[in-house]
Length: 230
Image (cartoon, rainbow, N blue to C red; front, top):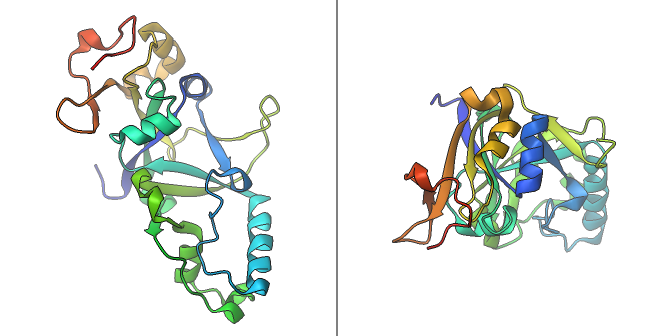
């Protein structure tokens, strides 16, 4: 694979994953609805003026920007549990140009900033801005996250959510079915439609000798009537 392209993974519950496949799109995470309340607050905000400024900044960003969240790896069982319906959902693999992705930095401490400079947005240098957007508490490290900031387009009238369409910058290349999924092959193929020829499909299982999720190599076990047993 070219160094300019990264293979990244998005975990999703089965119902929403199939809908994403059918509609060729991925949900954009809204900044004020993220599950980590410290998002964009990685700096030390003991200064009350700075704290107020950060809340204003986050609200302003949330009005027109969102995030597509991915992981560099699909083998962590905790992610399958938290984001893919306790291993019943899907993991979608995408090829994305590296220029559209930024890696999250995990830290156990809030980083220090120059309050006087940050209170004037024109004074914020690139490294400080990057730290503000891509710093998370160290306990989130298991996510191994990379993210892409996108402009919020028209809201979906059915769901009230925002979505990014599959494209050359968000190219679906892989679907991994969760180890405990009861998904039927025909259901997945129907959702993929004309993408079947270009998308690799596989089934996950729990590893026998480690705390990892791995590929099920025996294709006879890909579409069982009951969830996979260890």
